[in-house]
Length: 270
Image (cartoon, rainbow, N blue to C red; front, side, top):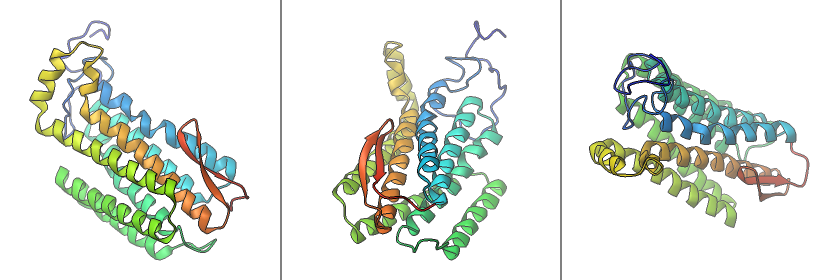
């Protein structure tokens, strides 16, 4: 089948869908090579910001755990891109399993905010690794979406609790704004994702009435990618600010190509 003259009702480049989930976007409507075009390209919010974060971590010699945090977000972005591009079960696992493991990495970073320089936090690391391994084994044996949603949701709520405790221990006005904005973005994205799941036919009907240039704004799962991706990036910056503040490195919030950034006036410890 020619990619320039394809029928979106037929299978595209990746063949039959093997994933356990298929979202509310008509498959291969935009490109013969991409099953869900808009759900794929919106993952750039989980690819470009962490790449920039990785660059800054290496440039400034920040603690390795923050490099791992940005790498974890990047892995989720790549996995989600591959999942929505192919709708293959193997790529679905590359999306969903890293979501849990990356959350474990973020929890570890927040747990270590007030640790001594050079401290490893092995107890928390082992606990989180055990949780991630348990989820992976259970999910491979019983690939039901509810298992992923519950075990991922537990981690998200714990991250929120950690952030609240960090703010209580060292309040900062900008940090509070980032926290509230992150919650609003993440919550809005999650709401849009689930509204699309529950009312897909109505969303499709609205989409059908809109001009082609406006129709993509009804890709609600794509908005989840945009909001959740950038909210997670902001969360890493939030965590980094409070870590550097604990180390008495005089951090301050500023802006750069990715929006929010943390600047230090003293040398960070690698």
